[in-house]
Length: 192
Image (tube, rainbow, N blue to C red; front, side, top):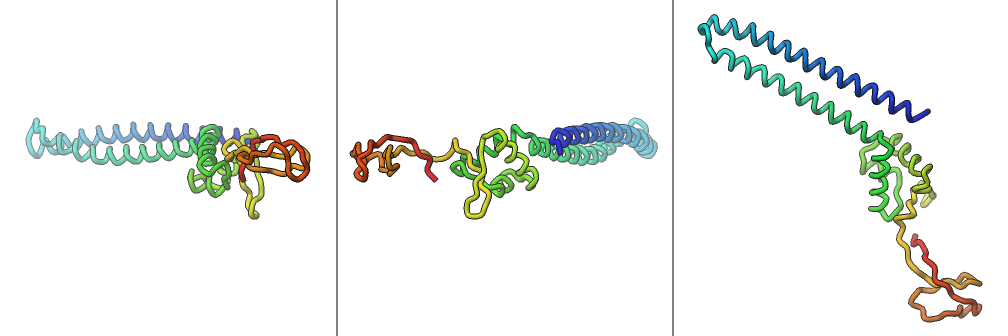
């Protein structure tokens, strides 16, 4: 399945939602104007011609209904925006990278799902995208798939024998390996 098609479908759905909200907004204003005209005329006939109170009562009642619709439309708009963000590879890649930094360069799909509120499919897709871009790689640790971001792994300097590969702490004052007499060189090692 091509992920671009998912994006086009989502874009089409958002366009339809926006058009639908605009139409609902227009219909509400037409209905509001019609109700205001009819109710205002009826109240004016009962209360008296030119009564501003009639118009104020009708306006207040219609404004309450309109605010409910606007609140609903705002909620729908926010939900659509959230879904767009959850499907944007660049934004989610940046968010997942922040999570990896928080966990010293090692995360699982569960971290991504719980911290970003993604579905399993969305999390897998974004992690696969980062893996294919060589931002991270996978390893199996404790029978679990772990995504490793090498740039966030802790590093330290150590001494290593060039011959037998025995390791020593950097603070060790020796320059020769006590086991084989080989030269010790300083390297940077990633801490697991």
